[in-house]
Length: 248
Image 1 (spheres, rainbow, N blue to C red):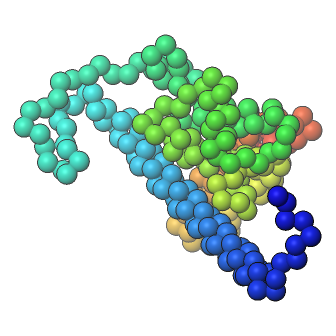
Image 2: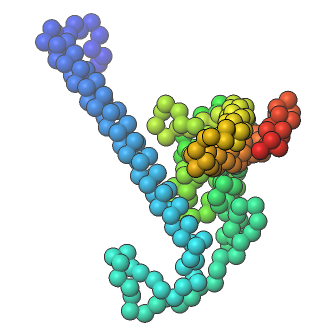
Image 3: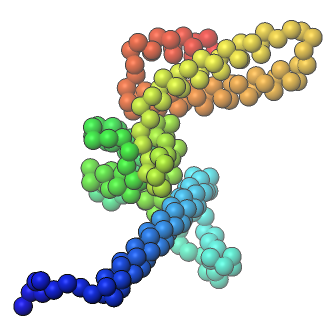
């Protein structure tokens, strides 16, 4: 039987309103808790990525397979050293062999990831987990013990990627090549001004300024080259960028 024509009592209506208010409060608390956990997860992923990068650097400086010495997680050396393992064979273009397939490593990870996302004209913002899925769905792999953490580290280092206002969401900065070109021009101008300083100036201070500008120029040039390589150079701006580099 359907309760048609039955008018709820004032007491029932008051109880229902209180229950709805309680549900709304609980929902708000759960949403806040979920956002807090998501932020903590992003921090953990970033920390894991940093550790993976440190381990990768150690692998390049002192390959584990080239040394008979190992240390346990608690810092104690085992009684017997592990047997030597053959070095991982390398393949070109930022990849290492991984069985029958090649896995991306280093800057190649972010360059391929940004290229894939830029080709999808469905918006430039995406959560890094979905971005990682986009990369792997295209048939690519990421080298490292924690591929997602390595991917996040490389993605955050791309000169073409910036964080959005949402936690874990990154977006492509399509204006990056123009911005980097302007920044490079400004740095070149400052370097020329520092070089043409009057002879009465402090030479040590001039050398320090010049070194600072030269390092900044090199960093900006590498970022600009990567941005142009991934998104494509702007023909209207390319000659100016070339003349800027030539002036240095």
